[in-house]
Each structure stands twice: as C-alpha cells, then as structure tokens.
Amino acid sequence: MAHALDRWIIGGVLACGATGLALLRLVPGDTGQTLSGICIGMAVSLSFVALLRRQLSFACDTAPPALRRRYSREMMVAMGTYVVLLVLSIALLKRVEGTALRACIALLPVPSIAMTLRAMIRYIRDVDELQQRIELQAVSFAAAFVSLLYLTGGLLQAARVLDIPASAAMIWVFPMVCLAYGLAKIVVSRRYH
Image (tube, rainbow, N blue to C red; front, side):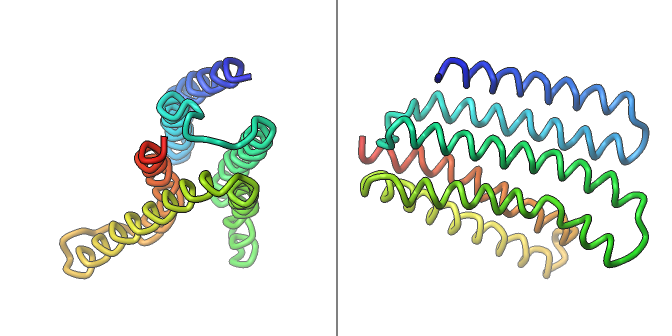
C-alpha cells in the first residue's frame, strides 16, 4: 500500500509540474499564468507530502492502518475535488458578470475544503490519546504561527511597508496552516517517539 501511494504521489508531482509548464506556454495571458500557478503549486504541495511521508514514515502515527487508509482516501478525494472546482471557478469567473452568480462560482471550492476538515476531524477523533496529543499540539502550534505571521503582515500593511492584496493574503491562510501543521507534526512527534 505504501509503495503504491508513493508512486501515485510521484506521478502526481510529475503530472502537475508538466501540466503547469505546458499551460504556461499554451494558454496566453492571465488565465494561463493562473492555471499554471495552480498546477505548479499542486506539484510543490505533493512534493511536500512526499517529504512528510519520508520524514514521518508513520513512526509517529499510532493509528491503525485501516484508519490511515480511510484518512488518505478521504483527503485525496477532497483535495482532488478542490483542485477541479478551483480551476473551474477561476475559468468561470472570467466569463460571468452578475454579482450573485459570481459569488456562487467563487465559493465552489469551499465544500471540498469542508470535506478536508471533516477528514482531519474524524481522524483526530478516532486515533488513540497519544496520537491525539501529537495532532492537537501540531494544530495548535500551526494556528499560533500562522496567526503571528498574518498579524505581522497586517501591521506591516497598516504601516504601508507592504502592499499585499487582501484576497491574496486570505486565500493563503489555509494552505499556510496546513504547511505549518505538517512541519509542527514532525517536530512534536519526535518528542514522543
């Protein structure tokens, strides 16, 4: 199972990276750059997943294999759905004018993020107490770190040192929490194993 998942992750990295580079050359203008950025971002994210799998090697994960498989399956479905809906949303927003319809289209990816959160919550709820402690400490550290980072950016923005569009800053909060969570889990898990 682990080797097959590793092959899927590596295949995903290569496919997303190649697609991103191809879109940059084949689709002109902002649309090509946006779609290319999404694909290359996915390749980087999958590379990070591969690094985490190598670092953690499930040595810090006391969850039963069936629970880990359920979590992986739910996360892959949720994130795959997210990518498809995000690309669809970006493409449709360029063609739609009405405010209400634009709001609905912009929010298309949100249910898939809710599915991601549901998978995470179910996983944390179903693991043993030690693994819950590791997960919750990692989530706490990640939330604190990203909050500090966001506050720092806001203060620099208020002082007119930085000029970051609010939409760009808000879109990156959840991915930053996920990244910080993964890194914090590596650090926290080493304390217990």
